[in-house]
Image 1 (tube, rainbow, N blue to C red):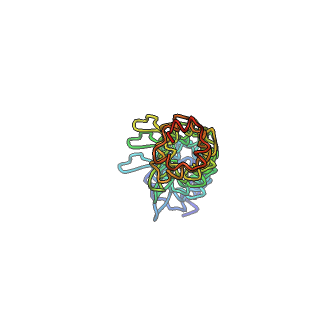
Image 2: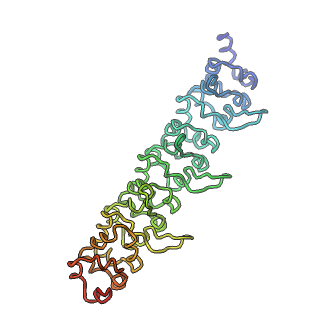
Length: 364
């Protein structure tokens, strides 16, 4: 009866003697009645706890009980599998109060294994709060992103704010066979992404491989901090016919305004085998292009190789006209590279602004 049970579990020696088989038969009320003496259960007894929808012993463990268990003991909660083999704990079945207690302790968070991290719900991850910074790289690597189960999408802006650039590289990075691959930061929610790219150091750490996974909206959301992207990351930006895939077209006028001429040369410049080729500035949207060519220094930096690429864009004529009288700042070699169609698009005002040397160079 309850009184006799209370007397039994009030004795640490009696609790330590409870067998796994006995643990498996305990009612929810009996587990609660163990109180903080739960800490005296053997690992085998802790392992026998059952987790499930209809009978959830693990879910009956209280916050006060979790508080007295060591990280090593927590690893055994519900961990006994078929044949008595020790498997991954069932801490993902803890009730919200017990989970909150567990993750309030940096040492407990640091002890969460990769296998345990893979089982966490999208409510359990935000509940970790800023203590997410204490998760191991292996645990961070196990987070997944997806339509039906998006652990990475549940990470909050506040949590991203306390993670180092090195830690961010591990988010969702565990691939086949446990190999570390590219992070899945593209799966972050809008708020978390905004927090990440508000930090110049985080932007500077974004890799070329990560850039290829980003959607256009995430490029735009970088704002003027796009200037902190590495040349390799800028080179990985791509243009595409489909708007939802066109990263370069997502670059805004305000973003172009903070890029140096040297940085502009890297936009979309990474070719096959990682070789640096001609930039894809022809893929800039009309507003960003207008900003670029409003700056004499940017115009003077346009290369002869970039000039003919403008004709490959549906807005080629508009792009030439957008130079305005700043066409006069094109280098002679770039002017000489103007195609017949581009020369035909030059306005009277532009022709008047061009130097005699430019007219000679382009034959126009």
